Image (cartoon, rainbow, N blue to C red):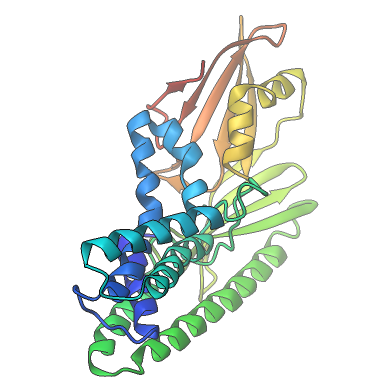
Length: 316
């Protein structure tokens, strides 16, 4: 989620412990700063898009990572502010703030590797977009309200929990509607519902049948549906299998649980295209990649295309 929401959630965690907004109170600053700190993995961007996307929401968002980040935040504030609060309390609150970051990120479709290193898979509940205006607004009111009413953080916690429950039931209703709507499209394998990145009234969806992937969006309340693309599945062959075993194939299998593979036969080479089906922007999929192979299924070149088809990162 966005850093503003993370900070506001951390500030409300401080409020739940009885510490309202105060820039001189380490027990307010600890969870507030720690709630944003896991996204410091953005420093991987200095090594390029590939390094960042492979590592984002990895260690820094895992349980060991948030404990280390929360503890480091607490120690920093303890020394900078002259030990104005018990270190144990400051450390527990800061860890709670860092943990709230991972919990909020689990609620959107990108997910986090919370159980790393035991489980390397990202966990996601796909309930919230990258920016959720309700969570941001309610959390802002929670921080302001704490200045005037000591019980306000409890009101915030109840309101946020109620909103999450509503999102869950809306998602269930929309998913059931899509299952019924696309039941005539052939054998239905799965319906994946993804929160729209910036809209709280839209959901993106991915419908998989035995023969195709259908990508679109649906309004949460009217259930009006728009199909963006229908992609016919390519029958698996030796070239697709070779591409799946390539570096790019391994990258996509780790990067996204939902991708489509297209085999294009050329005069002197074959191309296998990978599409990450989760994110659709400006009439195209956000992340893609291509493997070029010769007639003997040997890899000639492979490149990852993050954010745009115009950006190419060659894989050595």
